[in-house]
Length: 316
Image (cartoon, rainbow, N blue to C red; front, top):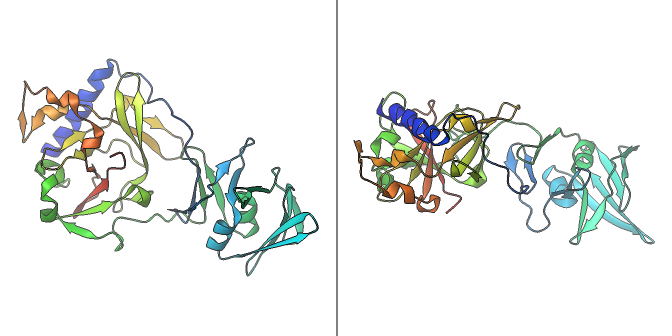
């Protein structure tokens, strides 16, 4: 019950900063790097990165994507003409550097953008390779992600995410109220994830897609989490100190229109005057908190009953 009350207070104290609460969410920053996800797991590109060209086509280094899809890549040259082939058990794609079309299973298809050489890598339109190899492809304009394959999200329930005893995490549990489930029972364990594990489902609850720093002209510095749910609280965990609980600023919530939304959490909040269940009227250090002070960010979800989940602070 105390945990729920603190979450409500966090939201109320934050909303009080924006008066009527009708302002929009944080302003968008510079375009993010295009990411490619295969079956909801982000692919790694060691050197040449995917990019979006002037007409909006996502271009990828052909070898990494094709081999991840189980295909073989061949290169050949006829005079000054360079050719690239991608072959799988069921499909065949033949391309020529500098052309916009390709032969997909013997049929000519035009993709409107040139196959090119860049950074000593062959870049091709992602849709050409993926569709040519029989994979479903979806562009996510919110995250600037390309989804290939299925959307069966990994869960923190999966065995690959190891349990840590909360007693071994005691340097961050000084504020015990944040380490209780909705039944007001204290967690015995915690699972630590990293930003690279996103997107991920917390147990069988919300899907956390992304976490970013942001800035609002009125609210100031904040953290924005793209999630399948609206309103779940977070807590900044500082070693040997009290947790800094944060509720969503509801007026700054953005509905993405794709069953996800952007939850905004202020970095600085008067809620930090609550320490150990006490309200410290003359405590002014709450104004000086910086996000880099936190080692972890606790991600709360009402469906997490047996363990807590914290993400290593990606902004430290």
